[in-house]
Image 1 (spheres, helix red, strand yellow):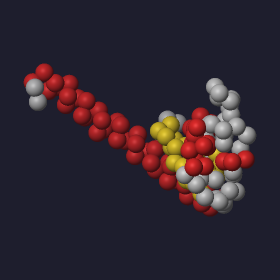
Image 2 (tube, rainbow, N blue to C red):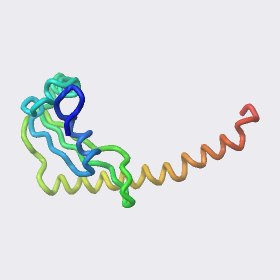
Image 3 (spheres, rainbow, N blue to C red):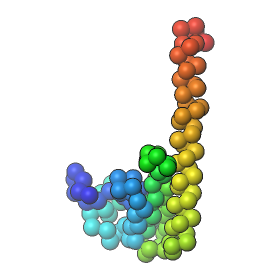
Length: 119
């Protein structure tokens, strides 16, 4: 995915855009990433490898990305750990979806009903 200024975005941005997990095995060796501000920040923090999986609810809505980072380069997550992170990401997406449909809407309805009363 080309970006303005050249180079790919970090794993989390790619995972969100693609709707599927993304691994960056070596931030320093990823063409274009190490030169971008996000890549430089990751390297400065000691991050060499990244994995991101999107938070997608059963309806297909995306709510963010669950990302993990490692100080050693290389793809380190096996299929079992990737599946566990995918399951957790699905649960988080479900929770965020529920929260948005209930708590946030209730709060907005309350504000709408009481907004003119100088709460």
